[in-house]
Image 1 (tube, rainbow, N blue to C red):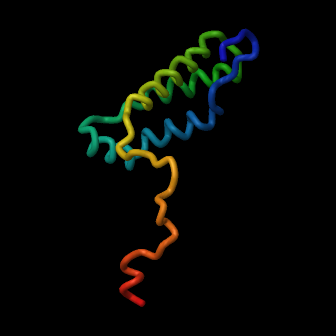
Image 2: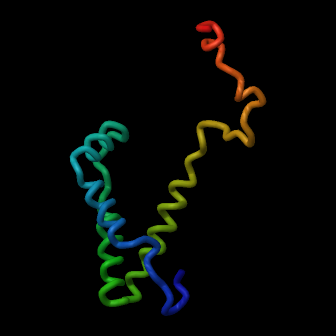
Length: 105
């Protein structure tokens, strides 16, 4: 992404703005506090939004720290393992009626 003059933010600035507004909302605050027991950290979304806007306005090289922020966010999301085992194909009897449907008829 950081290949000279062709660099651009990973996502549109409106996305960072929406994430920052969501993070600051009362509903998100209550949910995050209930689940994690701490206040949500919204500062990174604000920095990402500022860097994105700075890139759009001035094309400054400092705004490219947005890429590192996105990489860190993706790596943090990848560390969580799946709870369910994903199927490669549907069950062999997927088209048969369910047992409760057989009793009703």
